[in-house]
Length: 209
Ligand code: SF4
Image (cartoon, rainbow, N blue to C red; front, side):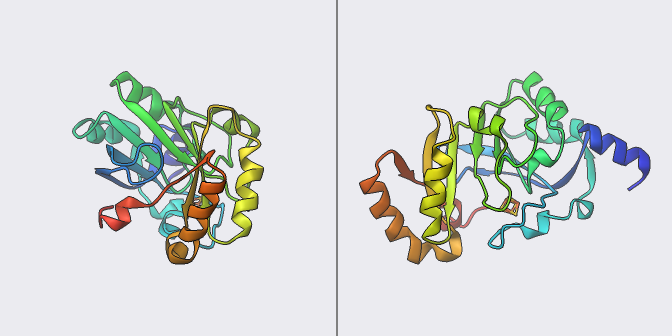
């Protein structure tokens, strides 16, 4: 990457684009909704069960002008999901301003580990033990989605739920490789603690991206 391109990436007017695709949001509150996904490369949170490890190294993904990303998205949907990687690795202000100017509804999926940038209609906060969210993200989270890999994640989920705003919707989602073991535990937990809801990765059951 040239120094010039690096400067543009640092400003958020170019972003390392891993992939973009039109599909159905499979998880959380907006599951079942058609949406255009923009997957931005770069993440150093380091979840050992991460299902997009190819996203971690931003240098593997081409720096792409945000105008091009918005142009592509506009062909497909008014609902946009920015995901990663960890999108907040980058300055999201320029991209979200441009998407908003097109009248789009913009959602983010984030671990919340970095400074909050961008203007969002929906913030899906999926906190990770290795790098906890910043205080500002807890305040704006629309949904809290805790991935349950083992039993300790129930404790972690309650710890995180105590930090989010009162309107935030609470979800427990089995980590995909542990779904057979953890799903029954999640069902029991939600029945005993109905402030929580179950989230499943329905796109994986539907075999869509
Ligand atoms: S925060 Fe997301 S992208 Fe980053 S390692 Fe964890 S699951 Fe993977």
